[in-house]
Length: 129
Image (tube, rainbow, N blue to C red; front, side, top):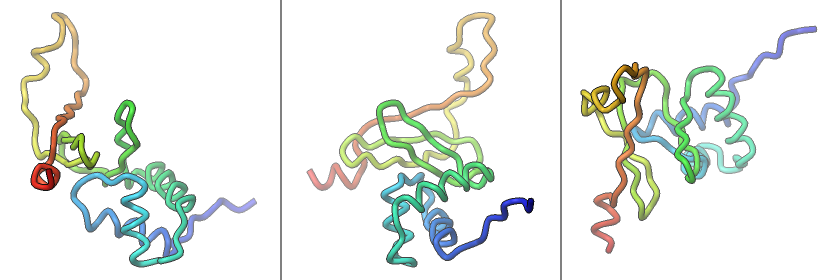
């Protein structure tokens, strides 16, 4: 039996291109809209399958927010955090880190990793209201 080889299809390339054109994380619908500019007939099932494949391959990282949809971003970026707009639900990447969050942990604990999610209203939504 031959090993399963993944072809680099136009659809997969369009989905990859959706991420190279955006610095911020994208959800499935944002990926679908961006990729359809290159492949108009692209379906949402193909996007879900390809996102899963790209995560398995380590090209993408899933960002799962409790009670929200899942976002995806390119793997290998330096440590950073996120800002979620409550109005449009867009997720923005925030460069850098506040630092010293380890001091907030209970005495004797060892912090192995941390995530920081800021919530509020983005500039675009504030201007629109």
